[in-house]
Amino acid sequence: MEQENERIVVGLDIGTTKVCAVVASINTQDRIHILGVGKAPSEGLNRGVVVNIDKTVNAIKTAIQQAELASGIEVNSVNVGIAGDHIRSIRSKGVITINNKDKEITVQDVERILKDCQQIMLPPDQQILHVIPQEFVVDGQDGISDPVGMSGMRMEAEVHIITGLVSAAKNLYRCVERAGYQVADIILEPLASSYAVLDDEEKEAGVVLVDIGGGTTDLAVFQENTIRHTAVIAIAGKKVTDDIKIGLSVLDDQAQKLKHQHGECFVDLIEDDESITIPGIAGRPPKEITKSILAKIIQARMEEILEIVAIEVKRSGYADSLSAGIVVTGGGSLIKNICPLANEVLGMDAKIGRPLGLAGGLIEEVNSPIYATSVGLVLHALKAEGVENEMVPSSSKGTGVEKVMNSITERMKSWFKEL
Image (cartoon, rainbow, N blue to C red; front, side, top):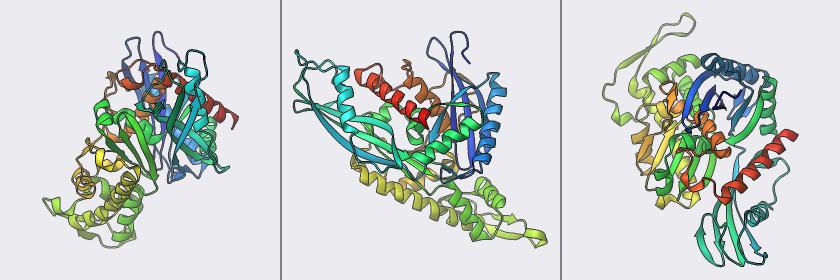
């Protein structure tokens, strides 16, 4: 899998409506090239969770084989995204005393305090996926992002812990292994998407990332370069399609077509309210509807999604400090006028998020919100390997905390190996 002077990384986004695979390489100059892209329809998931192993395995095989064909590289291991409404995020605090003779905080002390923060009561069916430090406090001095090398007697830490259902992770793992590949890492999808579509300035200023997929809407709030809140909402693009199907009495694929070809989500902004002809079912006469009728159906559901996002942003406690506004990505962001609607519902600036900062290869092919998660999975994998790359947040390059985070990640991986 290794090429001369290059490392190959594969991101696999197993979604409710599609499976995307992205094969990328990073050369000695830390430039990321997209070598291969594959996409397959997915029918084996419901709201981000595997419900049919065989269908999921087939979709994974199809997507990876397409990416292998385009890149000419044989794929062995993949970085997989996890989502679903079983994802929970918890804030936890820990405190330790520094007991070495010169009172200097070491990497081992940071590891010890992060371990202390993980001593939380979890239901037996939940497992920790990610531990993200929020801040450290040394002898009452707060706002410290990396305490290694500082002097102090007492250190406190606050962390953001993300947990997921053991069975959901196991089933994802099984599907990938049954398709003939190894799992290098399992990463929370909104975290992965953030690497692909947000830049450091946005994370510093405060931003909410909303990834509207097929089965789930993933959300992550960033402020001062750190992820502050995560949530997975079980309403997304599939529900919009279902609403069109029921509201207009059409078939599923007709509803999909109407959404993609004529769908808008802000009735007031429709410029040309033209008529759309829908073929009749089983020999029945065709029906005529207007664009505004379709838009009303879509708008109602999209407003609901954005209102739940607003509740989650409020719950994060950072609603008043998100200067960069909202970045919408995922397939659901392709519906026309999503940004004005998000602006109206959330009262903040909105823009569409597309994968950023890629150096070469199939850049045009992945220049779509649909590939935000799969490109982000690749970038996360490179970050976990400690690659010095401009896409990796500079605040976390090679720091003591970063080393500890990598060792925690290794332990998480070993947990998955035991499944």
